[in-house]
Length: 368
Ligand SMILES: [Zn+2]
Image: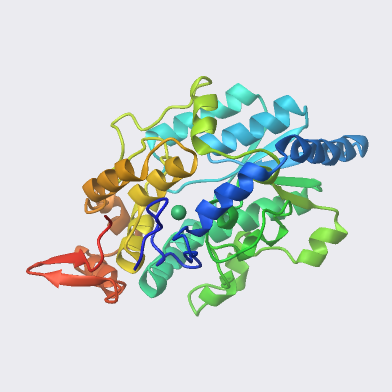
C-alpha cells in the first residue's frame, strides 16, 4: 500500500497506479482537465441540445437522474434552465431516506419546476439482493447502483426520451478501473466501477426470478441506439467540481446534514439522502484501507482547496471512526444480527494491508 505523493489516495484502490512522480490517476486527470478547452466542450454540448430541440420530441427532451443531492440538482438546472429543455427528473426512491434527503428532493422539484417520476423497486427483492451483495462481496449498494443506472435508461426507452444526462464519469474524475480520457458518451455506464463486470443476472437464485428485476436490467446497447437514446456525462462538457455545485444549490433550498458530518466524514453534504450507503463505503476501509475522509479530502486537493498536509491530518483523525449512525437501521433492513454483521465485515479485511497491534487492527503502512 503506497499513497499518492500529491493527494492522499492509496494505490490499493482498484485501477489506481502511481506514476514515476508518485501521482495517482485522479492527479493526472487534474493535469488533463487543466488543458481542456472548456469553452469548446460547452459548444459541443450546445450542438447536442440544438439537435434535440429541432427534433421536437413528443414528451420530454431529456432525463436527469436525481436524488436531491447537490450534483443532480445542478445538472437538472443546467438542462432545464440554461438550455430550456423539457426535463423529466427520475429518482430511484431511497428505501431509508433521511429527513434532509426528503426535503432536498421536494425543494429541488419546486425550485426547478419540472416533472418528476419516482421509481420504487420491490422492497423484498431489493432486501434480498442487497443482503447477498453484502455477504458475498461486501458491497450491498451494488443493488441500488444497478437499479439506478438501469431504471433511468429503461425509462428513457419506454418514454422515447432522446437524451439521458449523468454527472461525472467517476473513473476519469476520481481514478479507477476504466482508464482513458474523458468521453462524452455514458452508454456504457453499466460497466462502470460501481458495477464492474456483474449484471443483475449474477444475483438470481431460487428466491429471485428474472421477472422481479426489470428495473435492474440495463437495456441492450443496440436497442438504445435503434431508439435514438443518447446518454452523456455532463462532466465531459462542463468542468466538474462538487463543491461548486454545492455552492450553487445551497442558495436554492439545498441543506447539508444539520447534525454535521457523519462519523468518518469531513463534509456534511456528501451522500446524505439515505441511510444505507455509509456502511457500504466504510467496507472499503477493510478492503483497501481508505474510505470517506480520503475520498472527500482528495476531492478538495484535486480542486486546489486543501493541502496534502492538511488532508493527512484530517484523514488520520477521522478514518477510524465507525459508521454507526444508522447501524441499527442497516441490521434491521437486512435482517442481520450484530454478530453476523461484524463476522462478515471482518471476512473482507485485507490482511496484506492490515496487521494486529495488541487488540487493535492498524494499517501496516499508515498515511503520513
Ligand atoms: Zn493523487
